[in-house]
Image 1: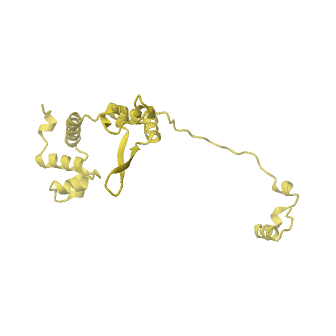
Image 2: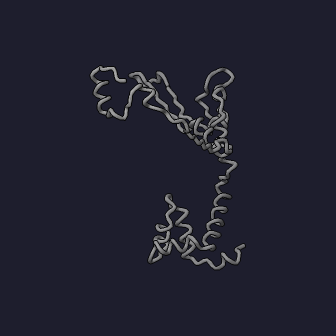
Image 3: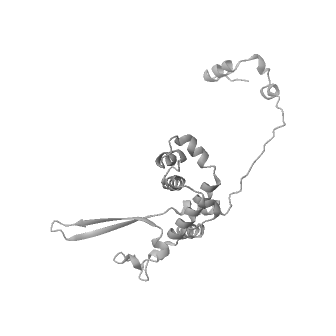
Length: 196
């Protein structure tokens, strides 16, 4: 059911929205150009501010979300699988990792695997000598960091430091340092002379 506002959207405006959503850089100017606007930069500036565009963008995003089932809760769940995985889940009851049937690895652990690298070694008759399997797992630290940020555990901390103590540099060095230049002090230090 289209609302009154969405009934007023033109096909060119719809194209603009679809091109905008398809653009990895999310560039309104590129979307306006692809949608056929003659002056893409000023057109994009006007289009992006129109309520009908905002409403259509929201509608298309909701439709896509239904189809892809990517929700905030799903993302949080995936990060939790990565952040709270237990390596013991990878090992079967016999204490071994079953590489013949990866479906035996619990799903919550399989979801943490970014890649699998298999290296086989053969003898001269092409008989398998050994197989090395390396799992590339998603970073627990990154997942935990993203979860912590999402839940607001990193409160912005502002520290103000005020120094009110004044030093009497002359009394620290036992002489009037205003008479000596910094260069003189450096030369004396380099020559091994005891300064002040």
